[in-house]
Length: 217
Ligand code: DX5
Ligand code: ZN
Image 1 (tube, rainbow, N blue to C red):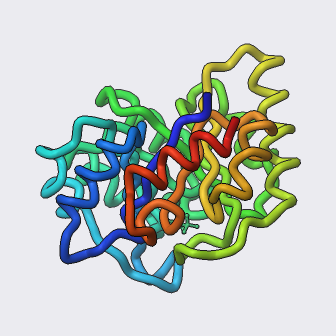
Image 2: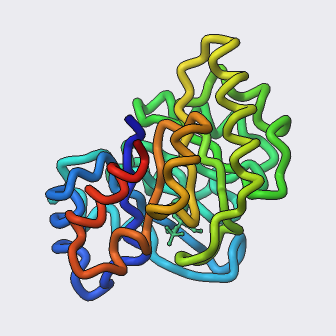
């Protein structure tokens, strides 16, 4: 069954501790942190201090999604703040291999994310060393956008490559996931679905997660 990563980007920023508690109570499998720098994407969210602050409350892995330029300069702070998965964008660095090794060496799971218009072939050679690929199914930068349907082909192609080659890389899909879209994302072969607004822009957070899991079947 597909796992759910709850993106706190859409949670109440005045009440993050409770948001995380509710998400974990509802069965979220990971807590997803969207770090944006106002440069790689046109929005600013939070930095490593948010992960450090919430870390003592986490019973699930901290899934950190860096939407920042020069991730190699910032990665260490996120490792030190308690990231369990650390994902950076292929479009944001010229030396992905070096950064993958730096993260892996410290026992942190390593991910690479690709934007909707970036072809899969840019990351295929890196797959043997990656714990996770985060396929963006919206343009990164904001929560609450509409799922881009062509992402499904990307998921299917990547699933095939991973299975054929026998890699262990997980496929995570991020953007526009809701009760209407999660089924096809699951069918296409994703291991993890990241959801923000479908979880936190609701009255009952645990219920929203259960609804997503049911809809995925
Ligand atoms: C977008 C972020 C997503 C965002 C998804 O750039 O990477 O994680 O929180 O939000 P929804 O689920 O509302 O599309
Ligand atoms: Zn994200």
